[in-house]
Amino acid sequence: MGFIEEEEWSMTVGTAGNEDDPKVGISVLIVGDDDARAAELLAPLVDALGTLP
Image (cartoon, rainbow, N blue to C red; front, top):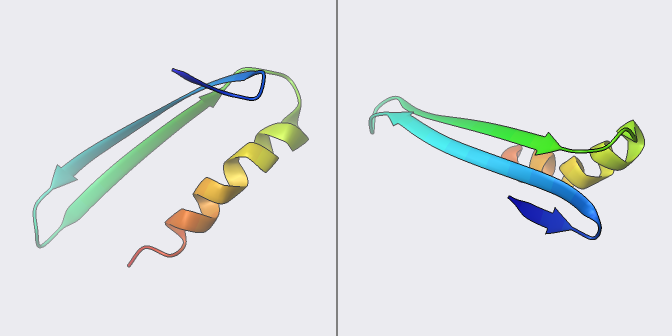
C-alpha cells in the first residue's frame, strides 16, 4: 500500500505465461469517491501501458 498526496492507493502486478506468450495483470485500488481525481491518478499508468509492445 502506498500514498499519493493524501490519497490511499495500492497496486498489485502479477505475471504469468512464458517467453512466447507473456501475460501481465495489474490491479489498482484507489480509496475515495472522486472519480475525476482517480482518473487523474491513473492517467500516467494508462499512458505507460500504452507504450508496451
